[in-house]
Length: 397
Image (cartoon, rainbow, N blue to C red; front, side, top):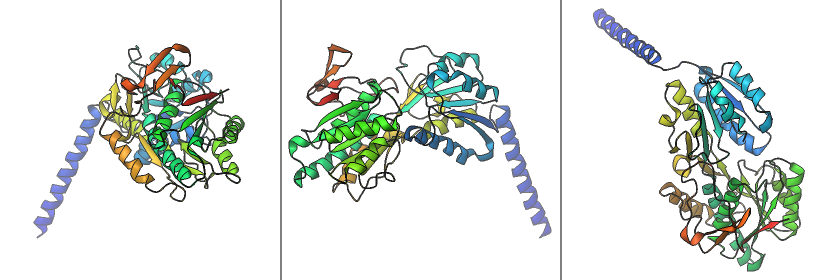
């Protein structure tokens, strides 16, 4: 019997030794035991955009624990990116993630060939020459915008059927930062989601000319509500629009649709649903790639455009959160699920499609007939749709 125990013990030790040898071999062939990961945020975690991005940092900490050291810099303006970037590089970061829109990242990357720089995309990189250690990525946000538009459209239809508003009062308000393609693409997809349910719905857009100003955003939302908008959404970075809806709801029926972060806590009576880009899949895969000593684009799953990557519901890069069952219209979850399945099994070509004429706000002679369709994020992770739909979207001056 003792011989059996001894034999079993020796077998276990042999297997353990083989495993240790394998791990050592992996390290000799490029695997890593430890990484230093940096994050540079354009704001802090009190704002929805940065909070949402910081969830990716939390995911890295949870997955890798003591195999990673994480360094962060917050409230970094785009034109002040150089100092914190050099600081993190000097502290030994192997990879640095950025949620700002500074071109300095791409310009400085060649100075640090041993570091991978991963930035949320801020412009069309298709056909551009970029350093091999510079990467861009973004979830295909228009998909979530469209699905949240369906939820808003169903709520508006309910309001019409209940006699709360008339058909010609189906007006959406949108608080936007700047008239960039990313912003225009998002609010257009949102409206088209609404119009897939309520075909007569129209939208009014108010630009704040800043990404983050609680006062301006709340004021813009309040004015849109006073102008008759019954659903408010945003592409800005504070809770101001949600607070405006919650306060206005004391005297009229109005609802809020969020982006990046659920507003159910600050606007429990009006927050309808939220869509968010999930940064976690890319960030985790990029860290995985470095741990394995592989190219990031060989590990990340998505639509690969050189060193630029995008994906949507199909790869869980976009998700819907906190549908308010207390206020949403009957059948909303089912309708959202059907649309999400369409995205998971197609390219989203049904979104920017219909009897619409889009006009380039910078060049009225440049128009786009959506009867021919338009596919967003076809060749780049940065949204490129930048046309204002004639007769259905009004820019509030």
